[in-house]
Image (tube, rainbow, N blue to C red; front, side, top):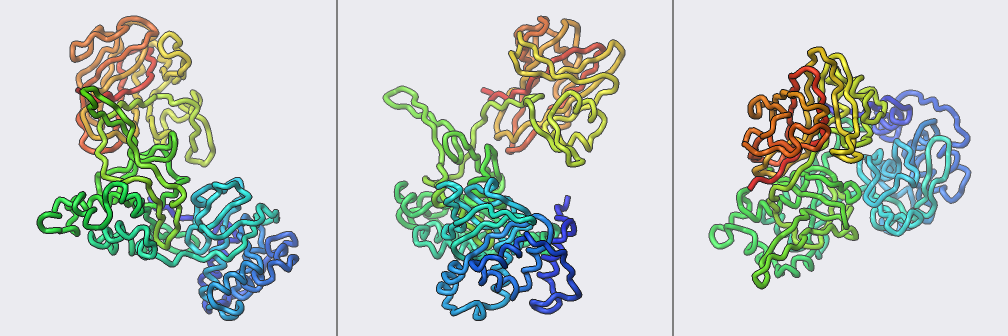
Length: 547
């Protein structure tokens, strides 16, 4: 589905479009009538001589009108001293010597069409681009009062209140990024080895030098710029792994090093190593969550972890030491101090050790039918929590159930409840359908997180309210999964004795079958309950690595 920002929701955004697409450069076409606002951003600038050059720049580029309307706007406001730093850096004597198109882009780079007080600040970036279309890098590691933008610009005054947004005062002029990912890397000697690897594999042109746009997404009247993210090792990091030149890197990672040296071949292992360092989206350190993201080498994922620091591909490895197995935790740490670099087409992050391609082994995956008091956003934009009433409201509304991505359900007369079965699951609420004595079949479809490739035994964890027969049909990813199952039977389909079988309100673990997963993806288990008067407490689905 196309994701298009409605650019006509606010007068501010409309004026931005007019500014960007004037018939004549720096001139509006038609008459612009603005409602006066004596406490607006523009009024603040006019009443403080500290911003006289900024006001001149906004007037010259015809942007000042944007800052006088009612709405929600954020302005990072350079002082006069900030502009003097900028002039000196650019070899200019005054504002009049700055190219008009350049100045307009620079000014729009200081403006957000949303209000972001300092409570939104984080190390990385604000969640959207500026009106100019690029991100501003942000570092609050030394506290909000010491916020640094784009690694060099200090915020010297936060949260100046105005009626149409907020102003933050800065000590230098912010400049939109001009370097692509590749040109930035080439300008940094500490990345010379990995830069040569990008060049020798062809990724410099195919990935790092292209500035691409998505015409299906329109932001401020312009096509949305596609961003990438790269994770890089400095020469010092590579040196610690015994890699002191590109030749060392190729010798270690290329399967064609001793023969053809066909590094541009996508099947060459050095080429795969390089593309594994790249993501097809912007990913600041502050955006990192517990998740898997596919790299630009299709089928290979980076696995992010945020417990005990921000790491990639955290896993245990077992080695034999003096005849005894020793298990250690292995991961690649993200070097925050060398990350969140904003370029014209992507974000640069650094890692503290070599990021090799990781093929994860199967691990235990548990998916709860009721994950707890999770907030969901309904299709009408309102927020709710995952409750009994929500399930009853959405029982025959597939579109509405999109707000609950891990579960789909349908029933006809009675209700779903979250019940606590202390004997079985302690204080964890489980999901139970209060079925009447009349025939009333129902189903639930549970969606897992992304699961590593491998072979797994599939277990249903549940409890029964009564020891009558409970006939259920399962489907896995849309295909029937085994035969009709009586959840009250003593044994599973494989002859295993089910713990607590026939006992009421006790935790039961029933093996449903075995699956072999060939790619990292999400999966679904659909449970179709067929028997009358069913009382099943559904707790979770477990995928256990199979021996």
